[in-house]
Length: 416
Image (cartoon, rainbow, N blue to C red; front, side):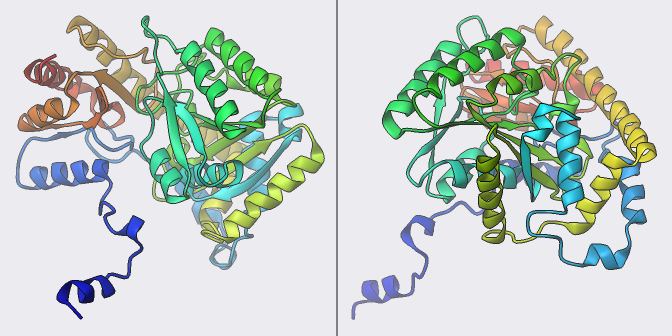
């Protein structure tokens, strides 16, 4: 046996897993920023999607920890039901829809954060080899989850020449998928899109409803709403439930709900996938399918976290405390948004309509060149195709001028 043959025999990974990257690029950039800061550099790290106080500490909501202390340790140490505690699932549905037709048309399962919800949507509403459809700017793990589950991802141009949602590009992509794969799974992160901060307005939602309703006459259509940042939207940005109600009966709507941002519990991995369908028999089949996927992946989710979130959503006093604490954090973020919009506009930076959320994407011809130049000034952002992502959530208000100056200089140095 030749040395080459022997080498092949020792490689036990399957070929498609043989050259996987060892770290997420965003976390790798964050690690570099942390290392340089530890060495004494003055670093502005705007890489991760975690809301920080203006003094650099992680922003938390004390009501969450109060709720955790209320939970009996014996109860929280036990296995959670595979699909999640019924009280938790009901509380999540009511948090999304209150009382009425949308809540009555919903089933849900627990997931480890919004990531788990996206996973379940992909594996249950696309066949292997098929592609989800999302905007040209998107959260990178959509593609990783799709690839890892032997699905794929297709995008359409997110913005038209005026900077608005490109409805015609969306229509063309939906029609193409109807023809090519006979079903459509659309993933929209709205309101407060990651990475652009964009939220669909009423006119744009009207077009989306019309396009999806038309497609649903020719093929099965499902719409995933990734609501990770919904509770940090600007006033008036939370307009989606009215349009979901209009889609009911034609399109299966899936809502990815997470406590990661809503309750500042990034490490808690508490989430849910809520599925809406007009037909009770189909809802039952969906719930069974999603529960089966829970057992076939993570089995059970964080029991303490789900019990605590149930308390936060159902106990009137705790809910009031948490909403008041979240409002403080929303105000903290909105002040940064306002400062960024004012300064970035004055410097001529180009970026989509930014109403709220944790991120904004600033356009540049050379994203990697822009990032490298900014790193030289100790400012860390994330490269995207045609833009860089800025985590305003991690940028203190006092540091916004430094961020805008670094963006302007980095874009200019990289060729505009």
